Image (cartoon, rainbow, N blue to C red; front, side, top):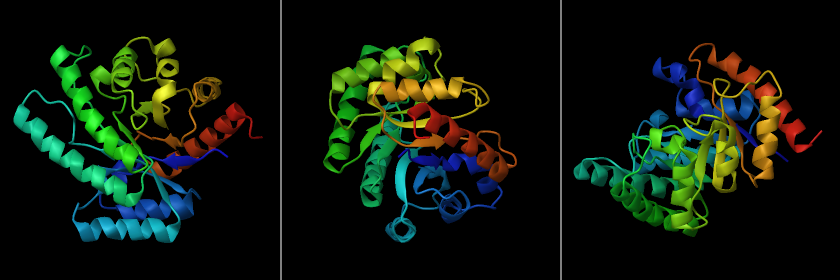
Length: 260
């Protein structure tokens, strides 16, 4: 049975105006949209203090919710400044522990390279750092890796090269479908074997035609078995627009994987 979620960033406008909290998001996931999987953006967290993190864990347990993905801003593996890299590393370690406590399925820690080409130094450093994170993730039952939304991660060959070099089961990318800067026709297929979490957004995938069904079939043929997560980027009428997109997404995915 296909699992669905909604990225909490889909409600960023409501959050920024104080009309939604992380707890409100979890309540909406459970009771408004009737889902059992959360896709949490750390920008919604008010704190990383132990009591607050455990209160979220308690809510997840009480509502029977699983965290399909935890997306972390501000913990990028690479930065040109070594001091910032070390600061980001400490933040990444914090969120790896939060991921462990919440029992997440995937954790997004970005690559941080803002050019399409990786230098040898960048590649070697990122492989080394991710290998450390991946070992922890694997030991605690989840996967970790970058999201396809920064320049270097919008080149599928870069991700395949990193994956091949790490060669550990705890590594996996968070795929924004069809967002490639190069090789858009083959990018999703190229990375599907090591995709850990999928986000679909109508800005990059045609939600009104056959493209969405074709993408679902392509990813399933590549071995993807994870959650199908909606990301709405419009920033207006978020409750209703998300509901509309979720209905379309459910229909397309069930057609694509033959659940009807």
